[in-house]
Length: 208
Image (tube, rainbow, N blue to C red):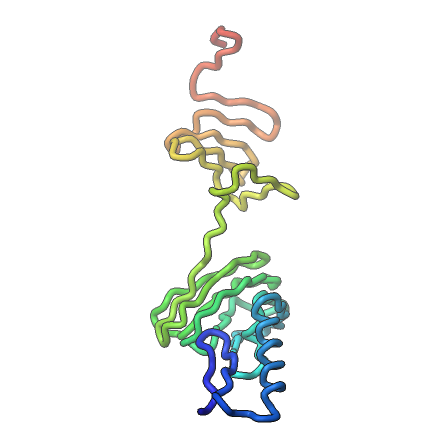
């Protein structure tokens, strides 16, 4: 019985009675593949579109779990996960100044864009020519006491308060901090310290 290979990582399953005197080499290769799929880090130098390939029974770049994209591409680029029939998940860190689009298959399947300087966890479903790459959510909804190790950068986005209509936004034109209700600014704190309110301001029970 000839060897077969696992669906997602191409580990070689030695056929019964096969590879007498050689099974140790195959087993060691399998262990190296497992090591890469669990903790492997690959730095991929990017000059244009790139392919992250996995070959059955052979140590391959596509086995690495964490992929660091480096280099100085002139424009946005694609990273193709190959082959398109293997289910995978990766952590991508985009160390370039361009947008990286992660895809598998090349058909009508979904892709994930990793912005310059960002890191994303993605999975590829390995469904063939129309295989999908999907962004894994990293919401903190289940963390009851989240903490930051550095400053929080909202990247130009608003801070929303649950299902309420309140939001806090930064006016990037003049660095004013806008407090909005239902999309309308009701209070503004200017970078100079000036305060503007859409209605009366009450202090210690007295309207000013």
